[in-house]
Image 1: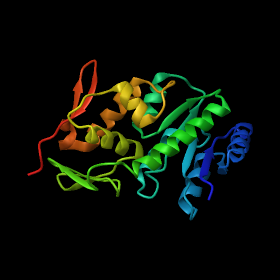
Image 2: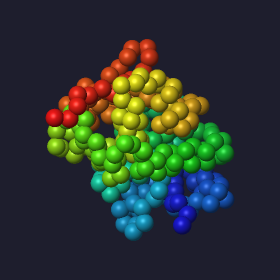
Image 3: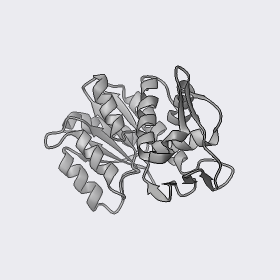
Image 4: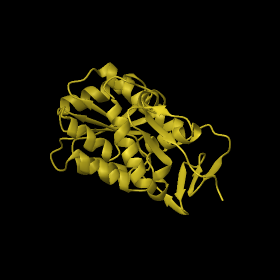
Amino acid sequence: MAELILIVDDEIDIAKTLAFNLEQEGFATHTALDASSALGFVDDSAVKPDLVLLDLMLPDMPGTEVCRRLRQSPTTRDIPIVMLTARGDAIDRVVGFELGADDYVTKPFSIRELVLRVRAVLRRAAGAQKVETESETQTLGVLRIDFDGHRVWVAGQEVVLTALEFRLLATLVKRRGRVQTREALLTHVWEMQGDVTTRTVDTHVRRLRKKLGDASRYVETLRGVGYRFQSEPAA
């Protein structure tokens, strides 16, 4: 069954172009011209989209608010989101990533590049469900990870992570005790380089630490080098 891409963009010509090219690549598409239509489709449809292409500038609601709502709902929090915008300011990129976007593409963009980005994000989302590890569940100090179930607990309380955040944590845990440079994390977690910068890694690590609470101390920063996961053994 073809993967379903939800295109949310109020520029009809762009939406049609995206739909045509994605369908040529074997994807199924659904187009929403405003935020309300997009959220309504996600809420009402029996089949959830596999990925959302989300414009930041929508007529009825900012795309950042759509992203926030999708991330808050248990039924949509794991859907990958690629943000589209004509704005190139770094602050917009940071805000998008802080809200849980998986990637960010600035208009105008190459259709070929966008399709490659979509495929890379979908691979990452699928990979987060199939993280290789020594056991299906690991307990490291106050942190417990169910790799097959894509679930995380801190001191017995479940913590909700996006697919990308889970993949980032799983990568650090699998390589615990070893320093991971920002470049290495970009290659392994994001599976791309281009304009996905080391600042992207820092933003996601900061967001991950905030969610981990008491377990955030396990993610160490080595200034000028990268990050390392260290924890005390389980009791």
